[in-house]
Every structure is written in C-alpha cells, then in structure tokens.
Amino acid sequence: MRTSEETLAALRSKPHYGIEDLLQIMQVLRSENGCPWDKEQTHKSIRQDFLEECYEAVEAIDADSVPMMREELGDVLLQVVFHCQIETEQSHFTFDDICDELCRKLVVRHPHVFGNVNVSGSEEVLKNWDSIKQETKHQTTAADTLDSVCKALPALMYAQKLGKRAGRAGMDWNNAEDAFSYIRKETDELEDAMQSGQQAQIEEELGDLLFSCVNTARHLNIDAETALRAAAEKFRKRFAETERLVTADGKEMSGLPIETLDRYWEIAKKASDGQK
Image (cartoon, rainbow, N blue to C red; front, side):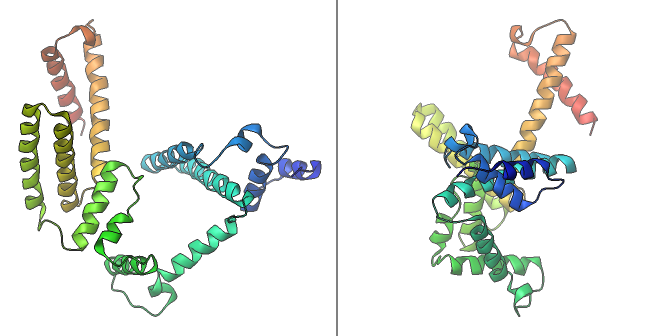
C-alpha cells in the first residue's frame, strides 16, 4: 500500500487526533513506504515492549501522576493497535472485531446492569462474573479454572491466583494461622534440603516455601506481589542510605566486613523508621 502525500499531509496537520487517526497512522507505518523498523516487527519481537509499557503504566498509577498516566496508557494502547494491525494484514481480525468482542463480554458479564439480575453488592458481582466466565469459557471442573490462569503472569501473582481458585473449590486452609503454619513446615524442609546438598531438592523446597508465603498473604488479604515490591523498594532506599553513611565516613562499602556494614545498616534502618 502506497500512502498518498495528501494522506500524509492530513495526518501531519491535524489539530486533534482520535482513535481512527491512530489506526491509520499504524497502517501507514506498516505500509510499503512506511517505517522500516515497524514493518519488520512481529508479535514476538514486540512482546517484551508490551510488557514494559504495561509496567510503566502501573508505575504511573503508583506515582499518582495524571500526565504520566496519560502518556503511559497511550503507549499501552499503541501496543494493542500494533498487534491488531499485524493481524489485520493477515485478514484475521480488525480493531473493530476486538471492540465488538470486548463489548459483548462486558454486556454478558454484567447482567445486573444490562439484564434483570439483582445483586446485593460488589461481592455478589464478582461471584456472578466468575460463574458466567466459567460457563462462557466451558470450564466444567475446578482444575479447568486453574488451567485458565495466565501462565505468563509474574510467579507471585500466578501462585496467588492459583491458590485463590483452589480455595473456591474448597481446597484451602481455614485461616491465616493455618496457612502460616506451613511456612514453618516448609522452612524446616528447606533446611533439611540444604543439609543434603541436593540442588534440585533445595530449589523445590524453596519454591514450596515461597508458595506457602503467598498463601499466607492471601489469607491476610495482602497482595504478595505488592508486598514484595514494597520490601524491595525499602531495601533499595536503606541500601542507598547505608552507602551514603559509609561514604560520609571516608570509607568504601566493598572494603568493609559484613559486620561493619550491618552496623551502618542498622543506623540507616533507624533513620528511615524515624521518618515514618
């Protein structure tokens, strides 16, 4: 497809753009006289870009930055349009097809809005959503619902979703205390594995311990992914403060024993705790 100069000029001079313009721009970029890089891309080659843009959008949400959200959500939309254009070129589906399927799904899964179903609140809405989802996706067993969990999710999120869905089928601990007891059990098993020196067994037991931590988080109504990210961010800040303290004393971290670094770390920890 050759793009006329009139079309290019119109796309350059618009005072305001909409979704149809975005779709056309992507079509132009992938066209015969478009961008060499864009024309070479496949679903797999830009897969990582999609993930990164989603994470950057989440970062914008966490930062509570409206301008940042506007930009990053646009970048996510670009990825959707990019993948859609690749399929449109193969005559598999169009952007309208995506919108049509999504709208139909939303209508079907909200019978309390578009139908005559009555609900008492959000909890019943979610229950109905899951029930309708299982029916429309032909999930007839509890195992089917676990199989449908996206395997590309980060491991903590994947584990938490599996535990939640297993819980709906009745396979779960009664409370957080019971779930927590398995952390102790798995810790002991990991220690035994470490003493055995068998790397495969150590890895397996460490995985079991992490899975137990995720289940405990779920029973405490805590998102394990969010909790670990917060802990990692806390570590990053305390590390930076520890390094600052060491440097202020005219020393280098790499030249100090761990016992000395621990003392600096405790000072940094107390300083950060005092700021709360």
